[in-house]
Image (spheres, rainbow over the protein chains, first blue to last red):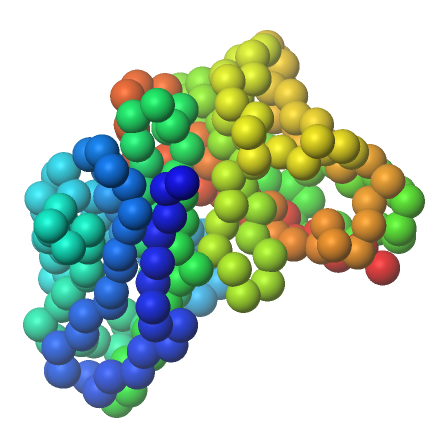
Length: 110
Length: 114
């Protein structure tokens, strides 16, 4: 079965430090990978998806099929990056549904 | 564009009552998805609907839960005879319906069963 694992429930860094939120998936085919973010008291919103290859708010994520990973990275964290981050995948034959990880709460300290 | 709307935002029910959760998709979106989030868990897919059709209900519990997306009006997720284990956040998302298009999420409905 398709599964997304985010091994860190909580992650705390200082402002200006690099940050990496880990995401591993299990799926034998070619998935579509996403990162969603939920800021305090706001709705879940798409941060980036791997096919667009965009950098949003300084975040990037590279799909590594060999390691089945899609880690989210930012070289210099900002306090406004504090939020819940969810990695998700969809797959062909999966009727467009998203399979989510449990999320990582990122706190960026001043 | 107001985005995906869900109401109510908070719903309190006693065991045995019915809960009705509503979702209005973004303008121009014809596909709706429902997800449930239990405490300390990620979102879990429940059901995927198009107008007047259920496309995938593989995540729906077999009993007490039903969903519809009529030709007119919002999508409804209905939970009959609620139990305490139904307490969760229920999120709706919509998309234009094209292949693997981005899903846009609503603010969620927090259901508390007493």
